[in-house]
Picture 1 (cartoon, one colour):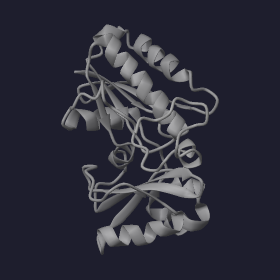
Picture 2: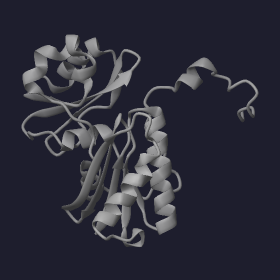
Picture 3: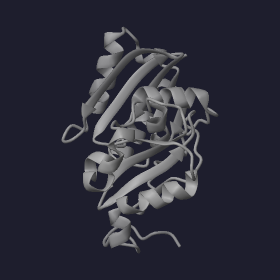
Length: 229
């Protein structure tokens, strides 16, 4: 089964095409100032492996948490491709995709992504990238207590870009930390192994926290169409 995997939850966009478990094409690129490159990258990968868009049998998207703008672009792009190709769209956690790419499956894998504004997105997973905690948005200084409360005395490894964003807080964990961002390969593999629920119609990104617009304008943006009661 040919699956297109996409993750745009961070500043590094990941795209991959899998045929079953086999990776036939993969790319990553810096998303800063290049949001239109997502479709360009997908088209290039399809051309590289001589794969017609109609041959894609499913689309998998990393639904977040992560960058609000990146998540919206990724979800909209994935939905557009799924609608056009008449194939299912499957959504997985971007933090779970991080855990899937961890270099070890021993103990608990803690995914930590930079959430900006002095916070990180955090979730704990087992060696199969299955969640053992709710995903949270936390101050970096609160991660240690959160992880301790979840894992107790079990061995822990970390994955994500949190240590890059907050080195002063996490540098003592450097030997246990694998710095990366979610890959299209991990998204596709998790989706294939999951429940395969089609979210083409009702799927939405997982933001965890309110957007800046929601915080500034809880009653709706001035001049916009009023919210329904």
